[in-house]
Image (cartoon, rainbow, N blue to C red; front, side, top):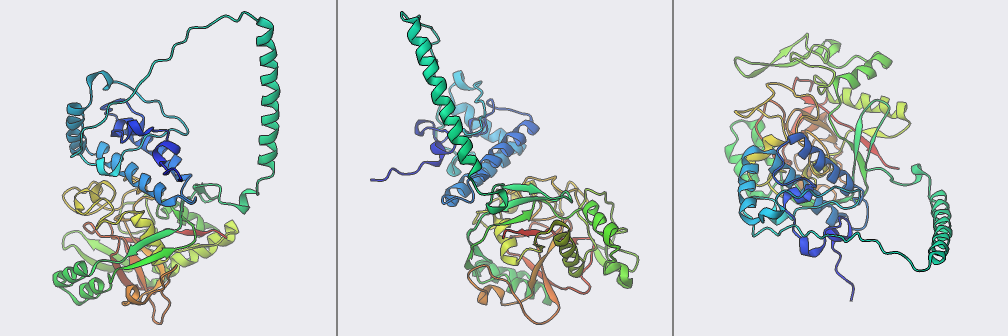
Length: 457
């Protein structure tokens, strides 16, 4: 009988008797660590380690653990959740082990179980510790020790030779997927998104509620196009921009090509009037004068679909690789990152503000935020929800979810409308399946931008 695979033990070095570990044990921290930077750094290390297993045959198990990493990080970086969790932990964890620090290693990464990601947990296990006796013994045959040492050195030399030969015989890096993240010459950071399956679109009851709550014909169309939900397969891995394309990165494109955006070609763009909260067309608005305060680290705005496509075409030539906008399926798959709840942070929108720049009482940034200011999702990607609506590659099809292909779908059809995903700094919390159609010819606005996909040959 085949032994059941235990990813906690095989990948992370957590033996069964120590499962499930609490959040601090999981992150390799002392109990009740209070430094947010230390917590986030530890979580990033765990995430990076687990990403190395994403393209293997156990990608499902890997994604489950990545989801648990995200849940633990959200819990410990949210003051209210952390306080409640710490109270629960103190009641269940023996005092003797509350100060134990688990030293992180390259291969042993403690992980919290998904069912224990919240505060309402069962009795949490104590950390098992052991002491090693270090008393030395003297050999009665010193010549034997010397002989054994020489033999050991010989064996070590043979092993090193074998390992060197194996490394030299491996395929070249361009012939295999060797990195879970990379940075191109423009400074765009890219995360490897593994193949997999997910339920794309919204359940029918959610679609019906959205239609009932719509107040304009545009909102009715948008709500109607969110479903029905279908099982979709992404069969090929791809790299996705960790962040939205920034002002500084777009500036390099313009400097090398002297490109003029649609807004600069006498079309202008839309700016939000703060007093009325209505969007107003402004002839002077473009990516350089967007109508909002921005630096080179902010995501570029006032970008139409044609501008984003031109950027991708230039980047492909510059990098000698295939860059493009993500398809709707690729975008939603990467946004969900293995989650199957209404929002990527759970069934409630309560914690979406931990991962997104949104409008509302808990808004930290009144306009766009510099990229990477909020927690990444389990795939290591930032700002998929909020900050900016993001252009997708697909043509807009109101019946896309009903008649799209099951594998790697992309909508291709007549008309000039394209699809935006994710919501922006002017919106509340959006679900991953929310989509908005807009003309590719005049879609520039202070709340729209894009990120790129790098295809893997």
